Amino acid sequence: MSQNLSITQAGAVARITLTQPEIRNAFSDEVIAELTAAFQDVGARADVRAIVLAAEGPAFCAGANLNWMRRMADYTRDENLADAAKLAEMLRVIYECEKPTIARVQGDVYAGGMGLVAACDMAVAVDTAGFCLSEVKLGLIPATISPYVIRAMGARAAHRYFLTAERFDAAEALRIGFVHEVVAAEQLDARVDALTRALASASPNAVRACKRLVQDVAERAIDAQLIAATVEGIADIRASDEGREGVQSFLQKRKPAWIAG
Image (tube, rainbow, N blue to C red; front, side):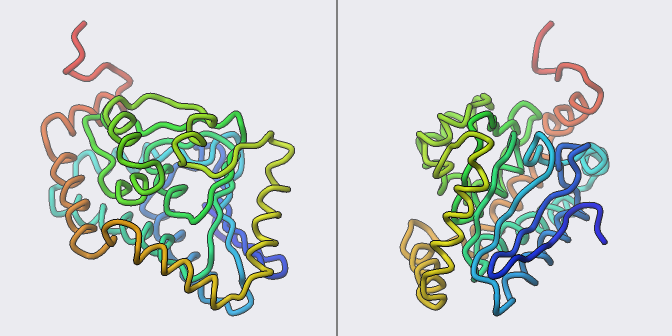
């Protein structure tokens, strides 16, 4: 039994739940591998009509965990390429999963966690959730998650929130289209259940075909060339002087060198 996540199924609905609330469900290379395998497994089940991605505790996902960040701070460029490729593969597997996916956002979403939400077909969030693309504060860029996040919030919003790393609330996430619904905490499960019922009542083949239709028609394909470009982008900036300084300053709880005073 994994301590990182759980997989349950009730009828035609499967739920993949992040189960590390003590570290705000921040992910590591191990969690990335388990999430990839979980979506591959559940997505292949003939009796599953919808998949809910959920989390325990006050945060949905805070991005990379500190131990993983400490390791990657010393990675070579080649090691960064291999590491980023695993995250990119996880996001691709979620995005291309044959079954419709719903992010049940019960708390804050930061950095790489934004990619998890964006890679799902739908997202319902509690009204108290906060959202942040915090990478530039660490001298990094949200490269591997960018194809999915930009599709979810649009290029105009991405220009702002990628560049400023501002925290924004659930109402703003709804306004820019990053989430589909915002509800009070006590209504979250009811709204997610309503979506899963709608999905279960539709033709499985038609749902699968519609999901592929949107992906085929909307903007540029998330193909091997685009994924490779994002992997190289994050590997390059992680290995840069400012990238290393940003991560080290975060881990050491100090201001980065580019902030005076």
